Each structure stands twice: as structure tokens, then as C-alpha cells.
Length: 418
Image (cartoon, rainbow, N blue to C red; front, side):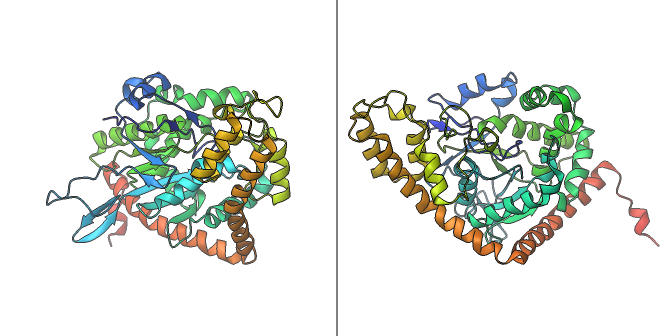
């Protein structure tokens, strides 16, 4: 059953895409059911997906709980009761170590992930195997993995609040992906929108990894039997594909995996500083999360604003201004209203508007930057965090894979007999 979304902004944050971008969001003022009709030619399948909406203002729609044996519901949001003990629903999502994390990534994905940790059992992953499907610099991969994980921890995804690990540190992901290949029709993979897009972008390297990407993503999610996946609407197709994989496996080998549901946030769509393209380091239009204040100010100062304000006295249209969108992400409600009014009435200039944004942005980013510096002073800390996260996730994955091997008939019980 599709829930009609009560928010007007839905992100296109890609948790598993080539860049860890949280920026390709788009405002929609239409019901979710109709959105599914136009998003994808496989709309007859997408209409059946269940969706939750994560509010950028730190609220989340209550999840659908599975009925409990006594017919009751679990306590609080995202929880069930198991023998009198509160048990939280599980979430999985990942980010690629593909470059410097920018404010689009932060607003569109990471900040939302932090909001979820008190309501769910959250597992977050640096998906390095997904990142090798396109050309990359091998020598810098480990540094990018560590930097990405460090930023996640500095933003609040600490080991006390969630499980954080590196995908390649839990080999069960790729083993399950191979098993899932045996129930995956090639035609389904060839019809995936992202495969077609990546194929056009990387014509010289259209490899099997690009084609099989959704199968590994399904393994990432299902190996932890995650019930929910926070993604952008451009990844809904991949989550539905994971649901299809679960259904196919369950039908052939008995019920094993749940069918994960999507959680969408309504984080505002932040474009690059050019105001027209998605934020990307390769396009030189990104504001890095860890850049020094003076660099961030220089990028803001020259960033594109409302095209209607050619002169200081021209009234503007905030809804057409990427700077105003950033205000929606970083400024307080009263300040947003103040900026909106003064833009429409030419009450102040764009530089005044940007100064307010800069102050609010640094108020939020400065503590994160300071925490990154503190973490970097103790490099062993991140090693311990990732080792601990991998150990916890291996324990879950090993148990699930043991069940899977038994289901498909490759568990060699006789080898343990004497």
C-alpha cells in the first residue's frame, strides 16, 4: 500500500550512488502515488511499495509495526516488544567513499541518518565495493574510506548510537550477492534506470559490476534483514528490486528475508553554487563540509542567486534561489521568514542574505569540523570504531548466511561430523 506523502519536498539522495550525493532532491507538490506513476516505467511494481516520510525537522512518520503475538504494538516509534524487551526495527543504508563530503551529502543523507538512530537499530556502511564499478584512483581508496567514516562519526553516528563499518570488511555481502544472482532475471537488471544512466556516463567501462550493482545492494540490505532503508526517490527502484529479490528467494527456498520499506526525507534540494547543476566536487560547485570558514564564505559570496534580482532594488523570488534553499536547510524558521520577506521586497541585497546563511551554516558545521580534528588526533579511534562495527555486523551476517546456506542446500553438515 502506498502512503500519500504529506510533504511537498522529496529528496533524491542517493545512498549507494557513484558519489555519496545528498543533493539531487526535487520539490514535488503531487501525491506519492502519482509520483510513482511517472518515476519509472515499472510503475505497476513501484505502486505497491510502502513508504515512510522522514521530516527534515527531526520528526518521522511512525513505521508500520508487525503485529505482536498478543495483538499489541511495540513501545514508541520503530520498536516492537520481544518477551517484554523492547526491540527496535532495523535500518540499513550506505555511502560511497567517492570523494570529499559536501553540504549536499550532509543535508540530504547524513543529517537524516543521525535523526533515525534513536528510533531504529541503525546499520550504516561505507560501501567501498560499490565504488569500484567505475574508474577510480586505487592509491587513495583507503584514505577516502577512512575520511568518509570519520565524517559520519563526527556528525553523530558514533558506535554508541549505531553500527558503522566498511562493506569489504564483511565478506558475507558478496557471498549473498552471488546467491541472489541465481534468482535474479538479467532482464530486470538491464531495465534498471541507474544502469542505463551509468552506462551512458561510462561508455568505455560498462562492466558487469554496473549491471549487478542492485543485486549487491539487495545483499547489503537483506543480509541484516533490515526492515527500512532511508534513500532518495531516485533509489526507490533499487529498494523495490531488493523486495523482489526477497520475494523470489522466499518463494524458491522458503521464507527467509523481510521485504524492506523505504524511508524518504523531505530535506530541501541543494544545488551546486552555480545554482543549476547538482553539487559535485568534479563540477567545482561544491561546498565541502570540512572546508575552512573563509573558503566556505568565498564560495557562498560568489554563488548564484535569484535570476530576477539583477539590481539591488529588484524584488526576488526566493523559491527560485538556491541560497534560499540553503537557508531552509540551515537557518531557523524566523530567519527563513525574514529572508523570504526581504528578498521579495528588496529589503536587503543578496550579500546580506548570504551573510546570514554563512553564520547559520558555520554554527552547525564548526562543531563537526572540530570533532573531525579531534578524531584525527587519535587515529586508532577510527580503527577501533570500524573494527567494532565490522565485528558486530559479521555476527549478524554470519548467522543469516548460515541460515541461507541451509536453505539453498550447500551447508555441509557432514563436514562437522566425526
